[in-house]
Image (cartoon, rainbow, N blue to C red; front, side):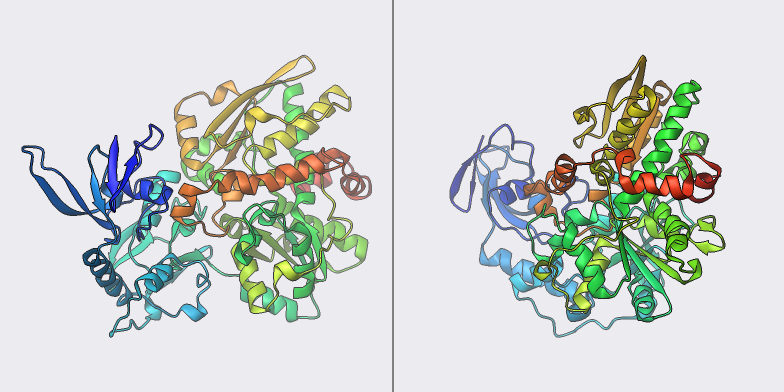
Length: 578
């Protein structure tokens, strides 16, 4: 198959034959402007920006006809002759951008997307201007506890709607008629939290502008940092260190762990911990649960519980699975509960004066932190939740340049972690960490560390078997909420002993609170491998690669929790979803 683009001949390979014309041009560095395109291929032809001029046979004669078509809707066919850069097309693009500008709040200087807004990039390239600038209306902003929609900035590209349908299958976002016209709204307009939405934030991640975003906790954190009577504590999740550097123009896959510790101290946090420590603690409890079920021959399967969007999926769509979900809290909640009990006691700081901040790649963590039962000793486990993007914004406001900072370290008691704990940030990692500890517990031996490659990678459903002594465990890893629907509907769940579920594709590294990746970069780059490489590299280089070998984990049990699944551990580290 051969086609011509702007007078240049291209031979279409078997690898590329199923691409759209837009995708083929992207791969071959031929610029075409687009705003509504998504890699998942379910949202096309809405923005009107990617139009090209197509010349081909009319199908009934030898005559050739010329048409203007959206490149995202054009399939590659032999003999296709394409023009992408004529003045006629440029004028049409500029006109389309001007129309969007007349409906868009163009207050870019105050917008958190100003450095990576796809629409702003298009405006700059077309040099489009409008004589009728849009005036923002506060009534057009919907804000819930977890997610916010600013219709003043929305370009109605429908990416969020298509992403939700494709990646979660919940269809929790829709474009509906409102008092001020068509607008993106939670399905049913009951609010995201009251709906069946997973709150995973994939709609936010797909938004090309700042119309969809997490409901910010930055002001709450800033007030706490200014309050000298509070002992402010921060901890970063595994996936944050894989991606924060992207917002400071570092190459994707740069490990910025040590610089984040310094950044948090520069912001004024009095103690800096790491959620990887809490991940180790999570595994101690969850592996103990698994071992207990193996010894009691059930009930199976046991599901992991650290992903709050997956928990929402269970509650809203598969309530019959609740008894199979581990009662262990997520690392975020375990960190908060431990900081306000163990850390409080050891340092003689009143738990009421400890203000816990978690820094995570996830929007659903905001909902999880606010759950009614996430309280111990009459204080909430977590006081504020910042996404990776929010941390970058907070650092930017304080003019703290992450790449310029010296490397730092986490504080003792809750800062040391194993390589296994860090794997929580990537799909399959919770399973891998749990198996390493469960295996040693069941055999009573110090088994060699094995990289469980069968459950690594980004396939939607990964399955394997693990032999522990005389027991063969059947395990599965579900990568993405949409795949969980398929998995449940297959009826195969009953065949497994242990199942990990992450609602976001690739796990937390692909969370809804992570730095945005443009549709073009998703097509051309390998962001999943790049981000995951940070966590796999830390694990490989770590002296401690099993959660139960972490000295600080040994200390917290010997001096506070006694042992996994103890009464005290259940009080602080477990939560039963009812």
